[in-house]
Image 1 (spheres, rainbow, N blue to C red):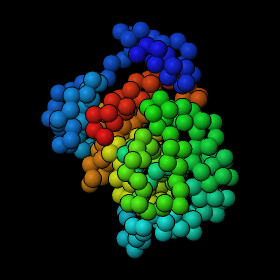
Image 2: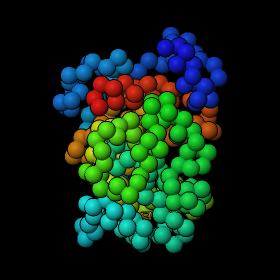
Image 3: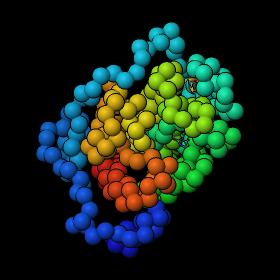
Length: 273
Ligand code: URA
Ligand code: SF4
C-alpha cells in the first residue's frame, strides 16, 4: 500500500507524505442514505450524504424552447454550431468533451482554456496533464476508450470499463480565462445535462467551484462542497467535489488533500461500479 501510495503521490507531484494521524480524516456521519445503492456498502472511507441543496437556485430560468438532442452525434453537432451565448463570438473551437460516452465516471471541469480552444479537446494544457495523472491514480484514462466513430453509447462493447468521460460546464472558452458568467453557464447547461443523461455515469467528479456550483445548483463555497457525497439532479447521481487541477498547480500543498479525495473516489467506484 505505502509503495503504491508513494507512487501515486509521486505522480501527483506530492513530495512528502504527512503521517496519517496528521492528515484530516474524512468526516463520517452515520446518517441514513437516500441513495439505495449506498446502503449496502460499507466503504473503508465513509462519507456523509449531503441533504438536498439548501441554497437558492443559482441559474437563470430555463429556456424551454431549446431542446438538446438525445442523440450523441447530433448533440455534438448542436454544440459545434452553437450560438446560444456570447462565448461563440470569441471561440476558435467548441470543446464538446472526450472519453467513453458510456463511462461510469464523468469528470466535469469549468471551461476550455487557450490550449483547449485551439485543439477542441478538454484538458490538454498543464492542468490537463495533472488531471491525467489524477485519473491514472484511480486507474482511469481518457485514452482507454477515447471517443471513436462509435458515437452511439449503446454500441460500445460492454467490456470497456475503467474509463471516463471528461466534459466542461461551458463548451467555449471564456476570453482571458475568466470565470464563465451566469448567463453563459445557463445557456450551456442544456448540453452538460444532456451529456450526463446520455452517459449515465455512476459517479460525477466536479473539478473546482464552478463545476460544483453548477452541478449542485448552489452558491456554497468550494470549502463547504468538498468532502461529502452530493447528488446531481433528478437522477440523484452521486457527485464528489474536489480541487480543480489548475488550482493544484497554483497551490501544490493542497495536493495531499486532493489525494484524499482521489482515494474516496476510487473507494466509491470500487464499491458501487
Ligand atoms: N480547465 C477546465 O476547466 N477545462 C478544460 O478543459 C481545461 C482547463
Ligand atoms: Fe453555446 Fe455553450 Fe458555446 Fe455558449 S458556451 S456558445 S451555450 S456551446
